[in-house]
Length: 528
Image (cartoon, rainbow, N blue to C red; front, side, top):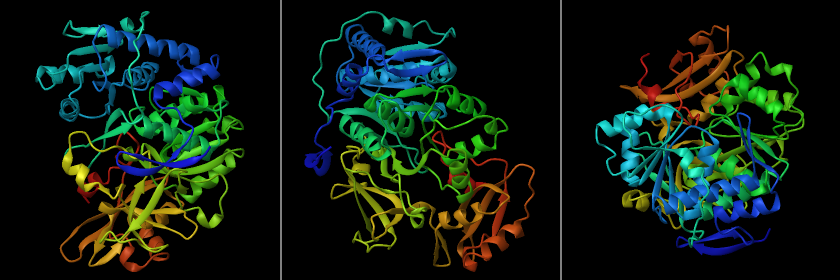
């Protein structure tokens, strides 16, 4: 596929010349090419692409005709993974409406902020999360919402919830003029300070990300993925669902990750493409049922969001012998992938997160925003059609988050002479011990290689003498006991003394957000 340059959102970017204009056009094209191909599978329900397309048209018709949903109206989804979630996203795209996927793990105050800030007109909720919506309504914090849809069989206190089933009745949708630069979603970032920011993803960005995955991972209509990460996150929504729709592959959907079920479905559904945070692979391979099955059908394993230990990589290669391993790096603001590891690479590149995606451009800059030389560490800036337009109603963030068309990632990185990207740390996770800069990921990678360590997170905690000192929070492997000094000695043999953790804490699990990423600011507050 040819790559050319065009101007989008005032940025000149590289784009794929031959591409669908909108998400709806992408689904329509796939339904035409693979009408009988399985699109969505969940709990025994199976939809072909023809059936998926027809249902999307029906839902869009009802939203348009009965509820008056127009272009740029916001539709909030407080849903777990489901077929309904997928259909609603594509139905909103058909109308040019903007879907607002909400993190189901958030508290009512957090959710009400997002629903208010996006000024969502419609809220669709699973009955599992009905109490949260009722709580927000009791406080009158989402009074601007005009219509509520309920999926499930709980009986709400109020009578104004519409059953989702009415959206699936026959209906005709009138065409709406939607362009590739129109907003597709508002996805709120999981910021650790201040209010979350609503990143505005476009049809242009989502489609280019799907094509980026297709090109680098070399997927096609035979691909079958198992979605266990949340669909309200870019990995599940774009890296898996949109990606499969682009190539005509199948999305097998789990409500939420359960190790035993994940293992079973991988085999029973002939899954070929897995995409998870490293923790899920670790849990999968540690489960007693894991060795019972054969995984010869899996040919593509992608991972990201946290460092992967060399031991885990070794085990993945051993148990999935027919699969390529792809480290991937991205963010909400990059509409999923910014870099992907190619199928084949030299062993010396194993610590890299890969090469920039085909239409991506990257540079590393110092504190003065001057370009760094190859191998020098600085902040990673990213450019391309997959970068979000900006943040919803947040001019301050829009002014501070972009530089000459590049998005500021907030990640410290380096790019080698071959163009491979290495994430060194989050800027905010850099530890300053008496003027010595310590990258937490470097220390984590060393501790991960300790034979008794299951998981680790390294943070800086305040210290009256040095300003900050290094703290390691460790989850030991099952039935293993580790002493703090054992960890310190292990690190001291491999790193400079000032990088050795002064504090070592052992816990049963690490705190994570809904995307599976470790919440480090919580660890800084844990008593030691």
